[in-house]
Length: 277
Image 1 (tube, rainbow, N blue to C red):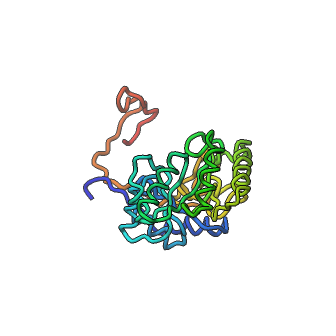
Image 2 (cartoon, rainbow, N blue to C red):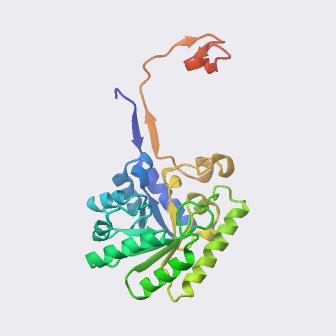
Image 3 (spheres, rainbow, N blue to C red):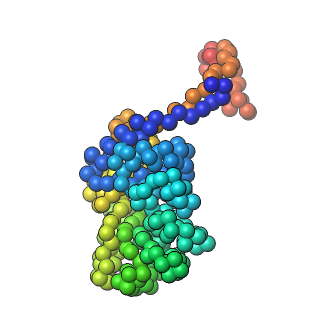
């Protein structure tokens, strides 16, 4: 080894997935966006699948298609898809799509008409994160998605949202988001359609609040063995997680410096005793 390198322990990934499945007693969606948080998209997806994950979650459509072309056959959700994406290609690769706006719903439905493939969609509602999800256009969106589902122009697979402060388990905002989630779900069901799967919990919620696990949890940072927030939830060890990544490098220079030595640009660190650096 002449350069720093990253080592990834796939058995740690598997152990973390199995732990969460055991504790939540629901399925896991292994979140492998951003090259599986830098751990390697395909190897991590395969390790999580082998450990029992029933879903894969990604942000971008190209990530989902990459997984398909490498032989991953379980359901894959892509939830960050600009209106300019090639939705025809998404449908041909059997990718589930997160729908967060009326415009996106219409684009995906148009792709379904062109390809003759009924889109599999997951409605994302904004319950307080104020990022992704349907918000102010909900009444109009609700009518459109309900009609599309009842007329079999789309398959309503899932209904989901995302916590903003799940890593602060005692915050009232978590209860308010759950309340909003259930209210919007009731409004959807009142139109005569019911999603097959509900998913709300991220890693922090999966580790701290079993009441929001629903049908599956979206396991991101915890799958890689890291605590969602060390200050509010404790360390990886406290949570029973195994970090999967190790950065290894050879030492190329070691020196003994006296107390009071300035270290680094601007002398931003000062040694308070004789120190080996």
